[in-house]
Length: 76
Image 1 (cartoon, rainbow, N blue to C red):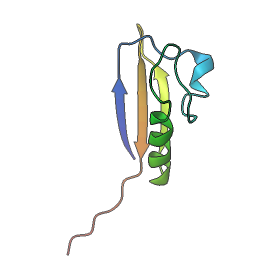
Image 2: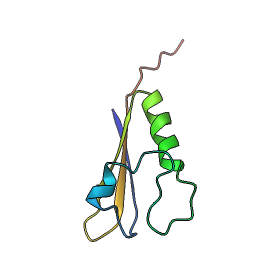
Image 3: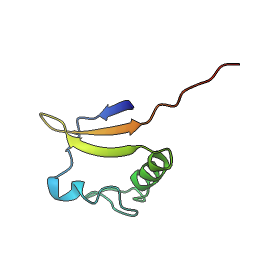
Image 4: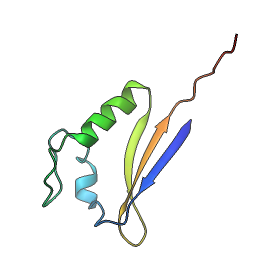
């Protein structure tokens, strides 16, 4: 597996929101986004056999964790 972590120093994601953050049209409080970005990310990651999750970052913010399976590359 390959693990990719992306962290920010924003307001973070409350525990009650973590369960629903990847649902389509789900927006954070005060957000002006369309609410589809994380749902699209989840669909793409899962289509490749991976997972995506969000963790709290110590001191505030959030860390998104994407895990994707590695494929063997065959060279001719």
